[in-house]
Image (cartoon, rainbow, N blue to C red):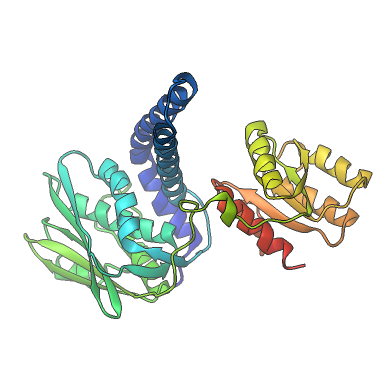
Length: 364
């Protein structure tokens, strides 16, 4: 059974109300950290270089955690096709567990026991987040008076195993026989769509895995999910990158972004990489720059959502003036990006920006 976007959207929306308060709380904490360290950097003239680096590292860590929160929230609300990549299952569980605790409530204890061995799989991280969410919510519902949910990972070459266990009521045989059927539910009307476990099965199967269930009435249930071990490297991050590591170039890039602070940051990063940069604050300004033809444009780096004209309209107009131009869309959530187009997802750091730009220009 393929993962149906409409079904996935329906189940994601069920969790959004529970997440909103927790996400706001966590974001406010992270913003407090970022603002606090930033003000100390500005206001403490006698900071040593080591202290300054420590403060900056704390700001970066807080920003990365905020990015994780955004990614997880969007994973439960947006329509998207699968975007599988190599990922560390242990890291995903660590990042998602905070949000899961917000969903299950204070009367349920969530424990994790993560393997120290290999845990690399090839899957869409947003969909694996959704698998965890569905299984944990079902486990919570099986323990109306509170209890414990346990998430564990283990490595059994060539398989990475994910387990979600509860000490709830267990699953009757007649339900076991139908539990992965779409729209089958034992919950009261309005309490569930009956899509959760069917989507778990579909997502895991799509990732090349298998789902097994162990249950006993009155003693609890364990879902065992086995993924093939993937030996590919995890996605690159900016964590260890330095300016010397960044790909460089001398081409001309037109940057179209309506948020001035972000546009200014992108311009500075690209100029430090050797590029010539033209700037536009909206679609009309970008098209006017292109049509003026004062200098060639090798790459268009544009936000998808813009005032007056969207990024697709800008790309068409610039391509009409410069048929060989490369186009890289920036997007916070993937909507409205032309199919097959190159995309740079926000938030991004210097390495991701420099790599995406250089890879696209090198295709010429």
